[in-house]
Length: 429
Ligand code: SF4
Image 1 (cartoon, helix red, strand yellow):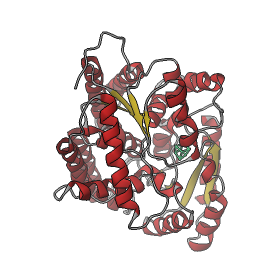
Image 2 (cartoon, protein in one colour; image 1 turned 60 degrees about the vertical axis):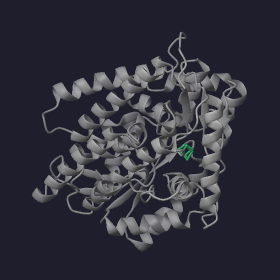
Image 3 (tube, protein in one colour; image 1 turned 45 degrees about the vertical axis):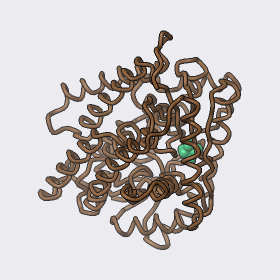
């Protein structure tokens, strides 16, 4: 059900995002050579078109639904709505605006929210405090971290926005998936009541089928990264993370992956690296640095350092069975939710994370790890030293630790980060 809207724009940050993406895209198109950073060119083109579609839909009066990235965007295509990922919006703006999302971190901090919580939420919280976002409802599973638990009540209690919270179990056992599947269904039904729509499971099924089609391409690209040199540029990691939210469940994502796979295959055949010579192969087991995406290209070009993948690019859930009954589909959705980046790592003890890191280092012939220890991620604060020891003992490779806030350049500056990586690289060459 749509409702006529006389009120002002309820997604002003999407307008800001659209303008920032348009400006960057036009620079990329007009300044870079034809073959320069294809993932950036294609990613921005598709994201721009989807954001524009959201802006038009908001004007038609469709409900604006906020969601945590741990509740995959395509699940919201059970409704006619404008989805807004709370975390991705903070970080995409942090990457594209000259001042990043910092003014909004400050706004919410001055309101009283602790400064040391996750900037992925703080940005959108500040924007909502300022009424730049006006959500009709928000949905988040009870995961993946304390920051989520501590931050979302702001929307419910201060802004009086209905916040729906499907319960996500910690245990990864057979009984967990039907339980979470039921929770997702109840969550969608409750959301439907709030916005005055019935969940349309056929529409949802079609969105999930698009994601299923992309899975095999994602796996092919992942496999190609095992080759030396890596045939995929560092920037792909950033664009694939953005695509996993903004293009989720949409045909634009299929096109993006078809284009990237074709380029990766060509480079693989020619044994070609995006930016000349690959000297160092690194794995970033947590996040890349969102406030400075140019760092990806700098590492490729200046240091010959490949980022093989970051946390958003090595966690893949199997395709969801959409051909059986609803219960089976919900079960698949539950598995995908529990395998989502950060949920998978944060909802259990770290043995499996450490094992996986060791395994990935061997499989992908990594020369080193770079661990970005994000201020908000308290639950990950104890991991780096254990991981460093495991990588040294089991694989014989070093790990660089960088303390920072991945979305706020004021905590650790671009210069300090580059100096640290440069020094580290010298020890490897
Ligand atoms: S980055 Fe860390 S603190 Fe922020 S949402 Fe993810 S798990 Fe939570």
